[in-house]
Image 1 (cartoon, rainbow, N blue to C red):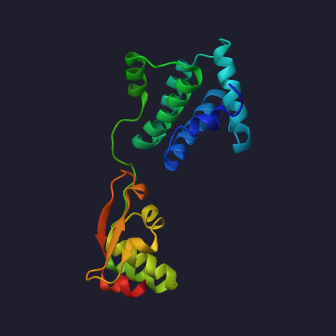
Image 2: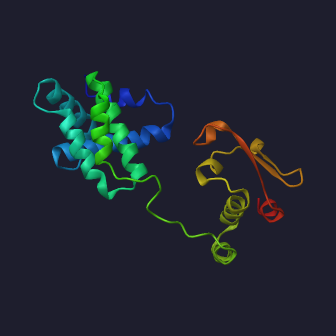
Image 3: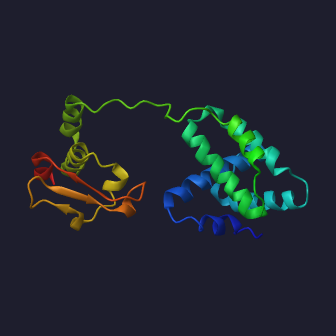
Length: 199
């Protein structure tokens, strides 16, 4: 495959976030395999070189995946699984191979255990929100009040259009379209009068 194979493979995934996470997984995998970091400009060449070496018999892609799985132990379990999925899917696509069930089990056994994030977020209290709002400009105040009252994720909120927000009903509503959400499901949320005034 050519040096553009990494870009071609990424285009097979519709969601930008999936492409971003899988690209990071491949980057970390190649850095693990070669024992050095790659800049973004070097990544396509490193990917093409790796595939060539595997095809020529100079590399054992499965042993490299096992070593990569072991190297992910310092990462949160969900991130480690997402990075591994990216590296594994790229190898399967580029080399036209498929992991056996036994290989899949061996990889899974080397990844960090658990399903929850390792960081804990502090609850946003009224006092904390007040401190933020004191230092925020008009736009920042509107955004923080919007997020706090609706419960909408920041990434989803930043994709909203004017027609998704209805301030003419009581309480004001926000329609979050499926194309904005991680799950692909649309939902409706509500705003407080204070958030409405800020908007």
